[in-house]
Length: 83
Image 1: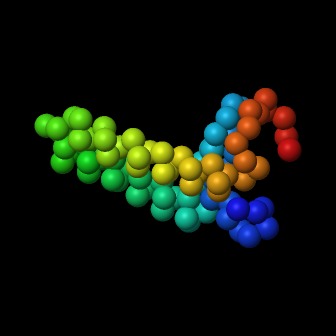
Image 2: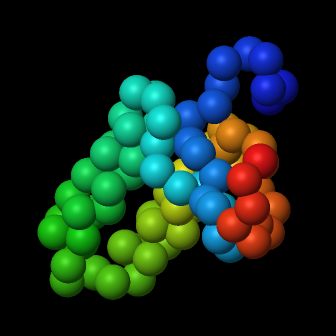
């Protein structure tokens, strides 16, 4: 996604790598949906841990791919300098 199409859902961390907090309603919706699904799956599949892991791995991977593509400035190591 390009920087000019308004697809910045997450701010970059100031230190380290990865996304910071969501900066748009889409980012918040994605984060809340991911967390809600995670909790629901943990409660539902508490007695079947292998099925829980088998579902959570692709769910987490999907969340991370979307976060990578929609983080303002992309994912790279940051040392705290203002950009």
